Image 1 (cartoon, rainbow, N blue to C red):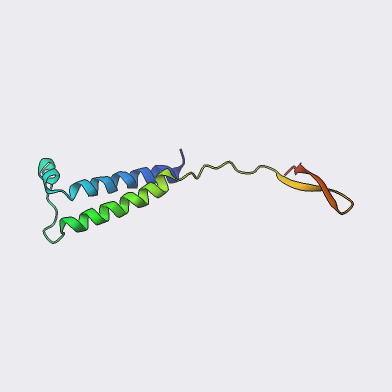
Image 2: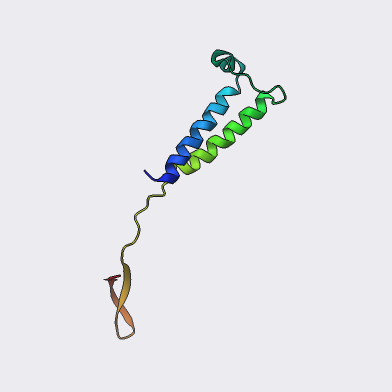
Length: 88
């Protein structure tokens, strides 16, 4: 697992927690109080935004195989007749 994906999963979890904390019944169950100036809708919107950011980094396929060698053309005159792998 790459570091980028791990950070994405953590951010996704934080976003899910923020989203859940936007509901008063869950806050009462967990005995958590938000500051009085922050409305529930704002917490929900921030939570959803953080979920999307975490999902992008956590679930994106960044582990694509890297090309080890480069293919170079084989010429016969002016025509390409094939390709070979160039060793690096």
